[in-house]
Image (cartoon, rainbow, N blue to C red):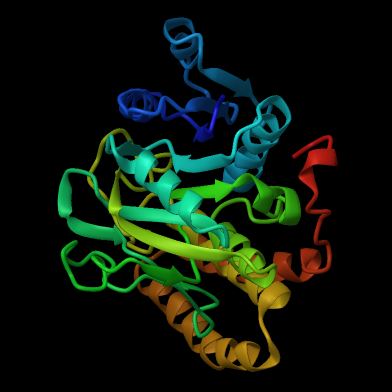
Length: 321
């Protein structure tokens, strides 16, 4: 019986995906691996299935983004297997051999938990923390990760605990949670969709737990980096995908507030948001990023168009996830 199905979404990241698959095959529990190829332009992803026929590859005709791409894989897993858990995992990661066993054990021992999240460290420098548990930050309209980019052995990073945010980079999700609340919201092409998903899980009575004894190494921005260049912060003017991040980050934070925030939480967010947008626009101007500046305004405009178009979250009956 398949206990866990791993979902990897690939978009022009064949090398990363191959390394991730190799690490998963080295685990002791042998999970079922499903790769969703998001209409990659590069060839070669089919070779993984030839070498490892037990791996399933789903081919999308278009780039569905993170949420819809994962929905495609999750839907396949729930329909075609009797799995207990689905492991949402970025393809630009390496998984330690004991990661999945630890996550599964935690989930099994705590019936109220719907999502379990491992510690995530920077690939190539495991002393730098990527995720060590996180919480919703209504001032930002997103999530806050204590100790982000700090030492991995800080007290907060070493503490197993309940959290209110699990990173979509790596999260083990109970089957029943997907069956009760659906998948990722299709309006979030990329970024903040894991915040929305975490909040919907909490609203429906599920708990989220961070488990530092399980470890994932994360390259970061695997689908957005050029070749194997160094990691560049998303808002750094040197990041070639800065405009992409600004647009989706701003739009999706607004959607998260619109869908999930209480009146008090909305007040917190909109107290800070005008200042954030002003600083962001000025920063773009000073760096000569004129396109990025207009992307900020486009994000606000497009949010106003789709804010009331929340889709049916029961993606099992959706023809197009």
